[in-house]
Image (cartoon, rainbow, N blue to C red):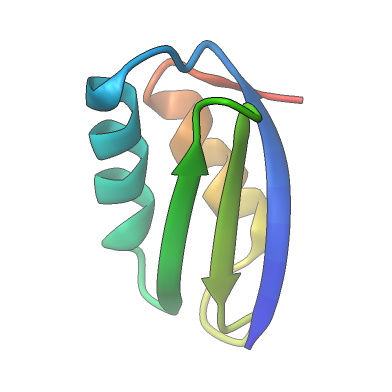
Length: 68
């Protein structure tokens, strides 16, 4: 398992947290997703053999948030 912390712009409320945690959390190979509104980050623990970082970033982008 690997962990990454992504800086994500556009998150402002609990709905944002649920949206990102839900959409990233259902990807194959994701173990844990934790959103911090205060820090503007998304921490993801994942299996790099099952899911690529680019797929995680694209999933967040598709929900309307900007991975920086």
